Length: 412
Ligand code: ATP
Ligand code: MG
Image (cartoon, rainbow, N blue to C red; front, side, top):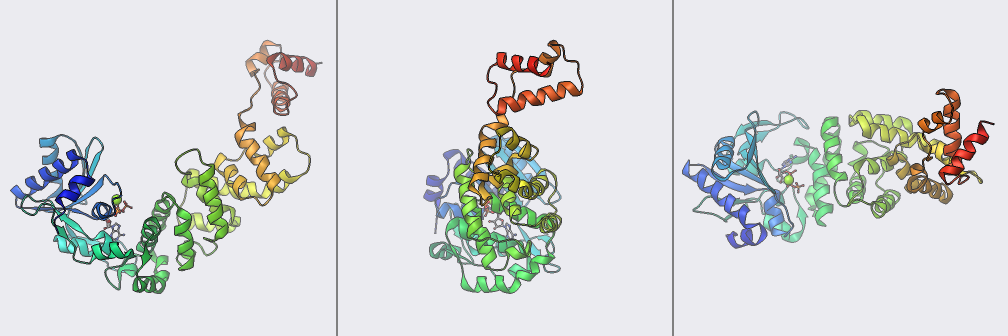
């Protein structure tokens, strides 16, 4: 099958011309160049994808540099891996030398040696990702499909290439579910069985790699679908036994998307929703297992703490200033998560009030203004500022003049 016209229809002209140039350059040095992986899959699925992976039976870094020299563009080389990233405006090409991989033990990183395109395709995860397109001038556009990827795309199947695929690299379980849900595909039945069989090997994978996969899941359009499938197959429990990909989560993730001003909610908000269902101890276990640190860990911890003060937010009469002081020390993602997750309508309303209005309300008078009115810096000034802020939150003062009146009243 020759896909020249498909390539021309699917990709911008300048990209096709660049691919031809790269293929010609490689060929002139006696090397074969191929377009591989996700880009070929997405070409057949007519899904836009301008992050292209190229595999070369030859020196990928040398080719990338030569291409940039002739056609313009920037190259970042990774000599340790024999890979290079080529960028030119909106185009990004990842060039790699064809390689073969072997796994010293389940879940460990592979040992990599240079190989043929055949070996390079065999080391890949699923049949739909193992197709390649020749880019050399003689065979330009010809499809290479040794594992029936085309047929599996038509049938909507995610299929591993061999029995040991998941035990070699258990992160492929999460990858499989990510593609399955993104594309609306199904696991091929034997692949599903192998996943159930090998789920326990997930325990051998480093926290960093699991975290990377979880981030990729949370960047999908509908992460909850991947999580509930992972739950069903016993894979989610391997991240932490208390994690649930149930209807509650689906519902909350969908609401998070509807409420989001951006194209999609931040991973931090999704993680806060996950944390909301955990005890503090379970959350600490999860953070340690996945080596989650920094801002995200903070948001997850705060979500659990915030959950513990929510009952106070349910008391019948609460001034806006009281709501403000109950929640203001928590991160916006934690508050947003609680505003989606709480069972109490009143609590949800109050958290939304905080997020949309209260947190933006500030008095017109500043500390400097108060000093100009004769209050010297110190405790008193802090008290007056807070009283002003509360009065403003509670609608007792509106204008600057009213604030000044209040200050004079407070000073007696
Ligand atoms: P996406 O649209 O998610 O980027 P992709 O197919 O481009 O999809 P990448 O994660 O960018 O996926 O990886 C590029 C290619 O490398 C894949 O198509 C697959 O062939 C291969 N690959 C990636 N991760 C693995 C893995 N863990 N095991 C085997 N092959 C992998
Ligand atoms: Mg990719």
